[in-house]
Image 1: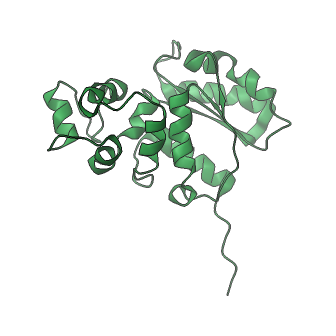
Image 2 (image 1 turned 180 degrees about the horizontal axis):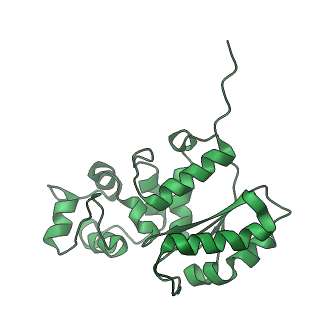
Length: 202
């Protein structure tokens, strides 16, 4: 699994530790973090994955749309283009996921999960706090600037900046109710490859 940074790696690690919530069987996996971050994944990620073809049955390549340096306006169009590149080597055994705007959008599950992980010290809703502090919230209940919102909260909960927080949050939020389109595409692909083994008849 080729990812753009440690935050992305740990967010995925937390999610993959809960295979039942994803609707898949447990999966053995390895992460590769691209030194060039999102732009590096976009430009040389297919080449990196091609070199791993003989070691793995499947491959995923993930990057944030924001910061990847593309001139394309549509993350899904970029995803389609990168899929075409990696499938010259992998066929249907590889998939690109382009997250818009960035992986931080996956952290915004229920307030309860965020309060627990961050040990949020204030009363009231975290979303209300964000709106009071100038962050717009989408119809889906997620900040339009998810990374900046998550960083702004650090001045309240005062936990050190750490990729491990991403894992702790994706360990607790609802993976079944997440409505982010990139996450839904990821979950769908994982189910195609690693769907649960049907129970044997009694």
